[in-house]
Length: 334
Image (cartoon, rainbow, N blue to C red):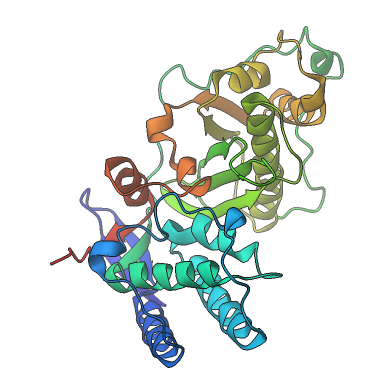
């Protein structure tokens, strides 16, 4: 990858990271492989998104790959997973979905891997900018609640600080998290998928897309599980930042698009009505009571985490989400 210093439109200087060179080399090698095994990489008109529209790898019934072809599949998945680690978040959920079939890859899975390669070939110029600009908290959105009359208030809960953390130096950065889930998105097991992305000020630092380990019967339950997974990461992140000597005095600001979940996490007087979500419910609420994080609503059309829960079709919504995370120089189809 290439690290560069860039100047943003507001005059702020920021570091940017581009994986273009690695992506180009990976595409070249994949094209050579495709040619050697009588397969092809889609052209620009057929690769506007990482995988084919409405394709579901879990219900693919094409023939199983031979051991030799399966080894090619493993190799390509490894390359794609590294590209995601290098910042190409626009293929994160698609690579995650195909990675779940390493035990029994099929011909259709391999074709979709080459589809992702075709997408990268025609969308290789992308860089992630680590914008240090402080995020402005919307007025009245993340007000601190009074938890004194709740069960947590009786315990006088507060965030536990590392006893051996170094003295905080430098300026503080705000933690912002977008969380979402795709309820029953897996067509075979009906398990949901958790997706979230974490920002420090305006810089994306962590992204996550993974199928949940249990089958939730409602959107409410799936969203609460996603919230719990994201908050577990946030708790660890706050510890790491403090141990690196960075000041962390504000709570993390968490944005989701399910109003029922948000009401149950941030309202001290709310009562759990679904026992199946009890653990996630108590974990997230306790963090709110400790003021480790506060939750707020964002319209689903602006929830960036939606990009990490399911493959989105080409269009304005997908482009809007990607532009929040990556700076593009898009090659248009001829």
